[in-house]
Structures are given as structure tokens and as C-alpha cells.
Amino acid sequence: MAPNPPVWFITAASSGFGKYVALEALSRGHKVIASARSTSRISDLKEKGAVTMTLDVTASQTEIERVAKVANEEHGYINHLVNAAGYILVGAVEETSPEEDLKHFNTNVFGMLNVSKAFLPYIRATAGPRTVCNFGSIGSWHGGAGYGLYSGTKWACSGISESLRAELAPLGIAVTVIEPGYFRTGFLNAGAQIKSEKRIKEYDETDVGVVRAMLDEVNNNQPGDVVKGAKVIVDILTKSGAAEGKEVPMRVALGADSSASIREKIQATLSLLEEWDPITTKTDHE
Image 1 (cartoon, rainbow, N blue to C red):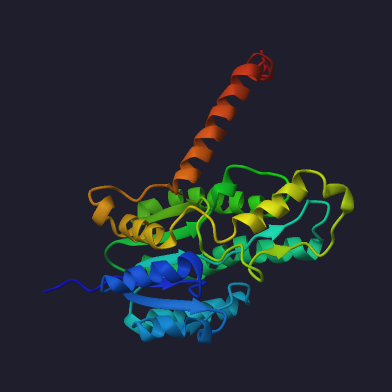
Image 2: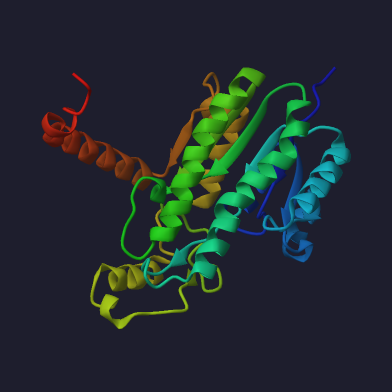
């Protein structure tokens, strides 16, 4: 008797990694429940066999729990949860407003948290391989001028995922965080990339201004191929294809630029420790 096909629930499936992970899973004969703020934005996935549902990850916990219950009832189980919702807020820390900051964290961090909390009871009750896949970023490792709030949300996603992994591993559920470099996903398109309403002219001639211009220039010229990236993600989460025989890793440095950036951060941190250890480690009680 053939095993039941894996069931995926994916947030923000209207574009980017959410969409292409859904397409890759469908191409393998898996069951996909794709969600977005409006099902009209994911009608193409429905045509390819996905079940589509409306979900705004910033909705009340009661509403998210209702969606989780309905989603689980669709096939009776859920194997893979992919939290793909997120966006970038561009601006110096002084420029972004408290309202913009809160909205950013509500989507990128609390959306991930609340969806996970709502779906975990059903994932725990599912037999067989189970994963929770969250999205960090190359920005989980490097802060920088002009994207401090985005970097903060992605550091949070990676840190929470690492802790969630420790909590769920004894229950047989693997947690991983995808930390992509620059991929052509529409992430930086107008309407997707959010720029702070306030702009302070003193920052225009600093690295903040450079980053603003760079993000517009790199848009649709990123080196990463989202189709190839989604295939790697599905391989890893299902321990198949290129990932056959491997366990789901704590993090996935997706893209050559992500790997290089993380190595650079590691080396810089090691150099910092070597320089300062003789001073900063002399703080214990005698």
C-alpha cells in the first residue's frame, strides 16, 4: 500500500519562495494548501491542484487557529509548514516610524510565531516526516545601514527557529530556517519593498543612500534562481533528491552569496574574539 502523499501548508504563496515551493511540491505529486491574503492572487496554484485559502498572518490568533483547523480537515494531516510571509522595510533606524517598525515585526516575526503556534498541534498529531520551515535571510547574519529593522526581524526568525528546533526535535519534528541570499523573487519590486515614509536628507550621502540605490539597481538582477532554490528546499525538507540520506539541517544558507556572507561574518567574529578575549574574559570572580 502506497504511503499517503505529504501535505504542505504554505503562507504567502502568491509570490517568491512561497509560490515556487508550492509549485515544486505539486510537481512531485504532493498535496499543497496554499494561502495568501487573497485567494485571487493564488488562482494559478489552484489550477495546478493546490487547495487555496485566505490567510493574513497578522490576523488575530483566533482567526489563524480557525484557518489551521480548516486546513487540517482538508486532508486530515499536515506534514510540512512553510512560513514564507515577509517583506523588507528600507530606511535608517532614525527614519522608520514606530508604526512601521511594529508592522514589520508583526508580519516577519509574530506572523511566523502565531502561524506556527496554530499549526503545531496538528503537525504533532501527524505520523511520518514532519517539518517546520521558517525564513531568515542573509540579513540574519549582517546588519547594515538602511535595513536595520529588516535585519532585526530576520535575526529574530533565525534565533527563534534555533530554539524551536531544540523543543520539537524530541517530538520527531524537524525545524529549519532558510537564509537566502539575493534571489529574483519580486521581493524588491515596487509595492513589495517598503520604504520609510520619513526621509532625512543627512542620510542621503551616507551608506543609507547607497543601500537605497543599490536595492533598486539589483532588483530583478539578483543572481539566485528561485526555481532552483525552491527545488533545493523541497529536497531538504523531504530528505530526497540532492538531500537524500541527510538530516534536515538547522539552517540552509541558500545561494552562493549567502554562504560567502556567513563565512565572512564568522571570520570577522573570530578575529574580534581573538583581539578582545585578553581583556573581556577577565571578568569572573576569583
